[in-house]
Structures are given as C-alpha cells and as structure tokens.
Amino acid sequence: MSSLSLHRGDHGISGDGLSLHPLRDFVADWLEATPAAILMRPVGAFLADWVQASPMAILVRSLQR
Image 1 (cartoon, rainbow, N blue to C red):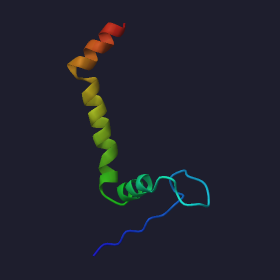
Image 2: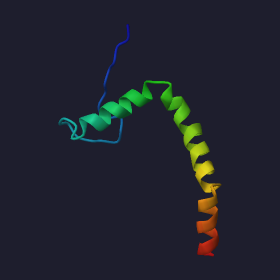
Image 3: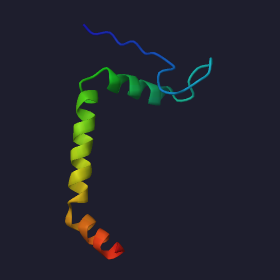
Image 4: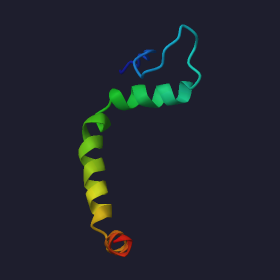
C-alpha cells in the first residue's frame, strides 16, 4: 500500500492561501516522489543532444551562419 502526501510551498509559490494551480502542484509532487525524477535529467539531456545532432538541426545551424 502506498500513501501520497502533498505539500505546498516547495515549488517557489509564496502565500498563505490555496494554490492557484493544484494540478501543476500535484504533478510536481508526484514527479518528485517517483523514480521518474531520477531519470528525467539524463533522459532530457539525451533528447536535447539527439535533437541537436539531427540533420534538420544541423541544417538550420549552418543556414544561420
């Protein structure tokens, strides 16, 4: 059995009232609590490098020079 505890105020949102974006807060809390948070940085770096190495990105960079 797993439990989910949501916490407010850890995502740079200040204020005493309820959050204006509860869905965004839920997704951020969920990602921080799952192994996906561990994989996001290397996967994001891989995808960024992959996009930069694609033929279309190389062509666009060469045309900008």
